Length: 312
Image (cartoon, rainbow, N blue to C red; front, side, top):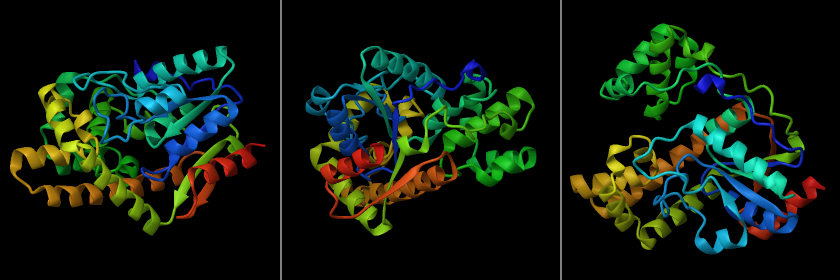
């Protein structure tokens, strides 16, 4: 059950590296791992899916040959994956890394997974497939009205642009009869990880927007449309969680509804910028981080050098 998931016991040498999409986390983590004998645990809710490669900016074979990565390509696109499963897999990875004398670097942008790992999952019940299917068929406005009536605290803070979170909140309340806010864990602690080993990478909005546009253009050039077509053949559209991945839903709409590729590309850029903004809002509200504001000219090596200085 989800409520049985406790905070992970992170080793004292663990490093946390968080931030919004396109900020430069992955490159910094890779270079840092090479310098300190580290291995990377991906804290990303979409990189766990096999085949979601281009759209999730998943480390390629060359990068994974340089440094061992964990929590990547864990399940097929038809399989469910949630925070509870993430914590279980991450605990195994942490034990494995520690047993081999390496330094775990937890790197990603999925705040909920960081929260689950560091603070546990509270007492929310496991998912109920029939109820979840029913809730997913309802308009999100109706679900939000139910949350407002039953749990004003959650209604004030929930990410309305994330249907999965909204559905989960209503599901948990209906199954338990309790407000969702009473079921969640309190992430006031960070499982023994000190602030000087927990880093939040940030950039100015204009710099992040520029980097986002370049990343999205590169994804389409690398074959995001063809990758999405292959994934659809494997059942991508039947997995509501995987279909939340940035880029893929918009490309599916392009393929099925006839939206032009140019319009689709611009829409992915808009959605990515919106997502990055929500990520930053979340991280600033949760956890205890040492913020590192990056400049447009900062190279991956420069970011790595700053991290090494702060870790010294």
